[in-house]
Amino acid sequence: MLFWDPTMIYLIPAMILVMWAQARVRGAFNEWSRVGTRSGVTAAQVARDILDRHGLTDIPIEHVRGQLSDHYDPKAKVVRLSDSTYYSNSIAAIGVAAHEVGHALQHEHAYVPLHMRNMIWPVARIGDSLGPFIVIIGLLFGGSWGTTVIDIGIYLFMAAVGFYLVTLPVEYNASNRAVEILETGGYMSPDEVKGARKVLNAAALTYVAAAAAAVSQLIRLLILRNSRNDD
Image 1 (cartoon, one colour):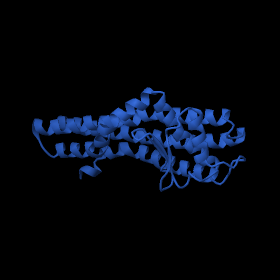
Image 2 (cartoon, helix red, strand yellow; image 1 turned 90 degrees about the horizontal axis):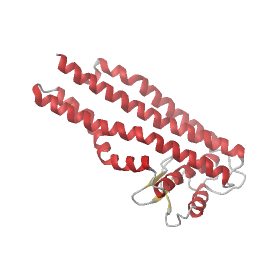
Image 3 (cartoon, rainbow, N blue to C red; image 1 turned 45 degrees about the horizontal axis):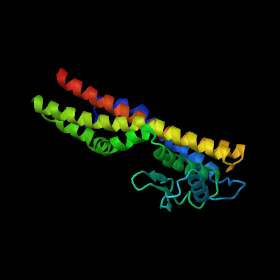
């Protein structure tokens, strides 16, 4: 069967990396979510103060359901913090909140990789979900028409790969901004900042793993295309 062809082996290392990264971020968050900061302020309060200090008083902070569903919405210009973050005064929660505010600061300062990611996203979303499926359809047909369909699927998936790759500097930069703000803004003591950094570093690995998985899938699709031409 196509879904179990030998090229699937190229995906195995990346899948292992994805599972390891997810386990690590869960472990780091769970560890530091049990440790509160000495100041006692909540993640939402810290996020609000950082935004206000940087003149972003027009960006609201909203509470959303879920765990680690925190994100900055560039279209709505809003920071959304999850159940596990919003009301918590833990080192992990404040680190996550500062990271999301870091994205808001990127947006305000026209950080180029963030702008690129936002531009790629509409096509990348389609390519990520439909690209491999379109390649499979192309493999089922012969002739130049089938090759054209395969190429369309690969090009669409390339947009997804580009999205995953440009996400890496976006996420690492947001984390670096967060750590610097927490260090210099008086929100945490030095030892507390170390804990926040561990959480953010673990979270960053999930993006590395996702990028590795996307690149591995692209390599697999290209091999399938070349194998078709060799037949």
